Length: 234
Image (tube, rainbow, N blue to C red; front, side, top):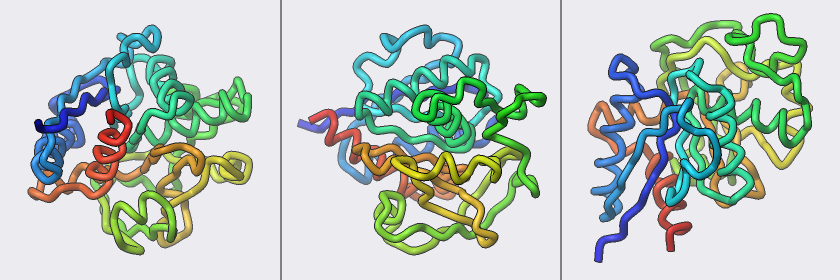
């Protein structure tokens, strides 16, 4: 019998967003490569009032497209995945909100915010990038021994972006002192991916690895996420 996965795509589906089209291309490619069936369900952020919306999901992917209709809905889904050991992938906006969730619920910074939606926040853990990465491509260095490096089987990768916001350097030290760690950097040593060292699979990237599917390639990180979800399903 073919293994079947159920994945929750947390985000507000929009055909105009390249990454959303890429995700819907990446999942069938990944399923075929692994010989499994993937049932993926979009969960609009404003539909996530509590964790019951995630019932039955073997993995949670917080997708690009922020600002979300409901920041709290996205954070709740991330919190549920983190605290229940549910495989989690966050890309672009998912990376940004994984950092906010960690700041609020692990470091107990109740005032942790995203500068795009709260420009006057006292603690903007997500801030404007020094150089916007809109439809940009760059090489990222993958930290040896991390889950992302294992997924790629390489020390670096070339990835695409569509973002203007990232980790605020002013809070980097406090945020990334364990169990949350940086797992990829750009050429200027800015953080481009994070993961929880004590979680079965919790990886988030500022870049959008799903874009590889638009060229007909299986995104290595999506495949690794699906494999982790498969292990959880079993």
